[in-house]
Length: 213
Image (cartoon, rainbow, N blue to C red; front, side, top):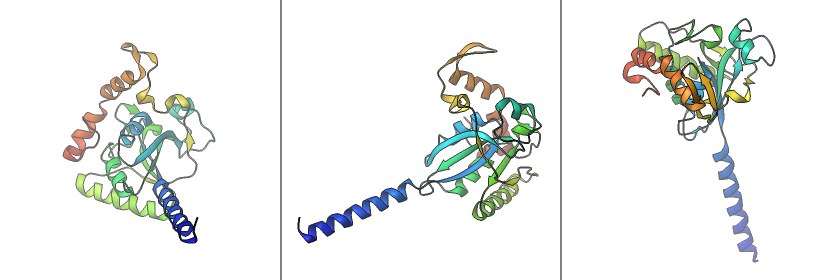
């Protein structure tokens, strides 16, 4: 191989690797919006979101279990870590969508799920996230013209929830529900409808409501 061809090959390889690295770069933001099954399902439907992981954060004990969190007293929220490609979807867009997919006026839980673990929050781990979250809340407050109780909280430790909570909305196992045996994915849809999540968001946000059918 001639020197010119070799240099051309090296240049091509460098550009390709750099492009792949830049394309693979992702950012993360953690939010709490009530049932983490629903938040995960919502955000995994968006272009640019690589993955949404259900978990717990904001509490006082390490490695909490689901039963401990929903029983209360640990201070943890059901939360979702959203990993996204900022070249496709911005943090501003994610925060805009998140706030309009929950009831930001409810400080006692979300929809039919009550208690501290179901409250809403935005968890930030750097100055940029903090600034953008403040702007997003201010804009949402102006649009809604009602008191917003969703806080901005410094992210300490995010604990990944048990395996059976991940991608719950897509599960195909047969489980027993109040409606009888159902596929997990079907049971999720029934739960979401009976909890009136989408109806409440639509009533609160009107045409700005997100993820409502």
